[in-house]
Image 1: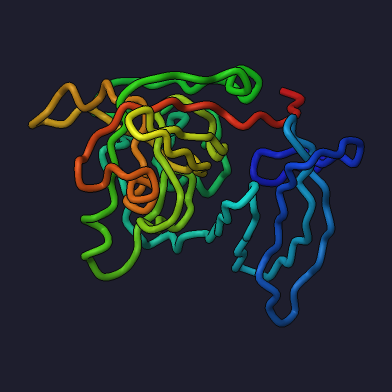
Image 2: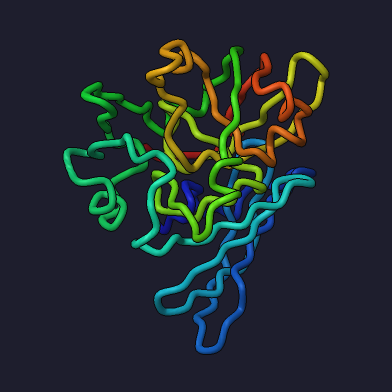
Length: 232
């Protein structure tokens, strides 16, 4: 069965919540139409595929996500990741062995949950944000699953969720709520602040702004996966 971005094609369910996908149309592209079933609605869209370049745009409710594959010579957002699935990080990305593969950071092995288990995931805890440092540097950075990191986009890093996956994040301090795409790993303990590893999610700068805590740095949040119908 064809899979794209962790969603499984289906044409059996309808709902008011729709998720629309489309890739940028470029010369010489191949067009493939697909529908993806999620518990809360149906994902419908068109893929435009080109050799060596793919850019996906999709929507969940009012939130739009743009997915761009990063050039392999870009540095990782988290260069402290030592291996993924026992391989050098970029080799694991190249082979597509990232989604729920174990990985090692500073000698500690992290084991992500399966896609099926992730469907029931929700948690309350502390969120932080990252990305301001990359926004001020020239060039780009690669997330742990090989996507181009955009600090202004609605994305996030998580230690244990499969990549990629969408979650709803609610700031419990002001009631603001958004949907983000989890495409990176973190947050991890830092040398200066070992307790930083206890935070449950690391949001992009853009996501933190939408939730209203980019100046504060931390916020108490509720995180819940937007479930998809999965076979594994």
